[in-house]
Image (cartoon, rainbow, N blue to C red; front, side, top):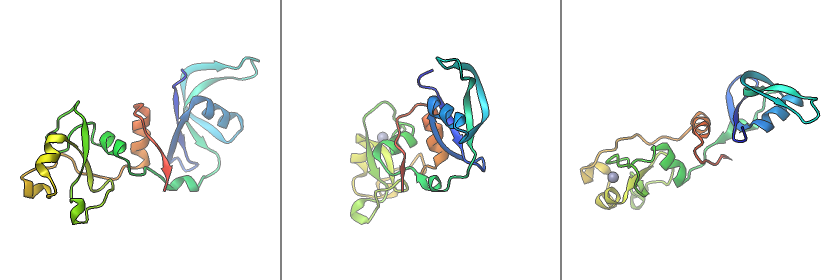
Length: 166
Ligand SMILES: [Zn+2]
């Protein structure tokens, strides 16, 4: 129950965030949000003044604009989560992963989601400061910038994450 998370939708039903269920219940009780979908778990307050099903999805009553800009900010950890904890070149899992710049930094490759992938030590060493084709290597994934939807999915899967506003 403690770890139960609730999806928060904006007034226009677009996904915004994920919050702890207590926060979600407070939003509903303060009439800031309405329940879209509930779980089967009932929560009763100590004074018995509140008795309701724990929400699964809530929707804000008023449209919130600033959260629209809420995007994942680049981090090594998120690159590894995005690449499903696998080396982007050989697919190895359960090894310590490094971050590889697809276009090497020495050639102006940027440190961002679009140019960085998770790579095992071996592949990273093999590739060195070359582009994959020059090293005879192939990317198994296409690096992309995660969306707020990805965040919500990862959060629901209880993967450690950080959400910052750009
Ligand atoms: Zn590898």
